[in-house]
Amino acid sequence: MIKSGKDIPDKTLERMVKYRRILDNFEAEGKAIIYSHEMAKLAGNTPSQMRRDLMSCGCAGSTRAGYNVKEMQHKIKEVLGFSDTKHTILVGVGNLGKAILSYFSFRVPRVQVVAAFDIMPQRIGRVISGTRCHDIHEMETIIKEKNVTLGIITVPREEAQALADRLVAAGITGILNFAPVTLDLPENVYVENMDITMKIEKIAFYSGEN
Image (cartoon, rainbow, N blue to C red):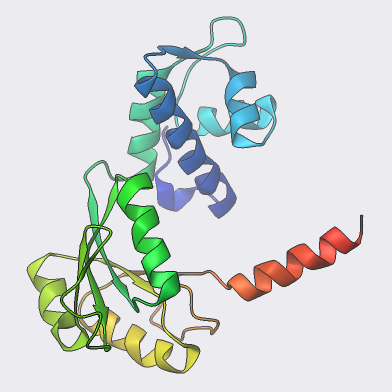
């Protein structure tokens, strides 16, 4: 029986997203078959781990014959739970926000940033990497108009909680939080925290161990 994304551990789900990206690249290159050792190397894990992951979503293949790229794409999409483009918004169009808009506009075709928001007059009305920046007072209206369920927060830590509360009240159920603060939100809202400073400190620690 094929598991849904909600039944799969976070780490396995992260690997599934990597696999899908790799398969998309293979399809774009016109390749019909991929082998476990190829995929494992590109995903940064082992062939045995990759085969276990693929078995959990019903993908059949073998070491000799390989895996059918299109079939694997279909199975993984079933597990991840969506094939249509998801609409998201970004709040806070400073340097980090601009970099994220640029990244999403070219590299994440399944997630479309349909609007950005800020409080600075010089940013409002501008189109940045294909996304228009609006006054933050328009946020709730645009979320409802564009049926947005995902939000990206790139504001200072002291503003993050109040902003997240507004997003949730407007119907947002998933938040990618770049503010260095833990958000207190309802259990039905999924939050992924991206504390860049913490990540850099962790890298600095481990690099010093070498």
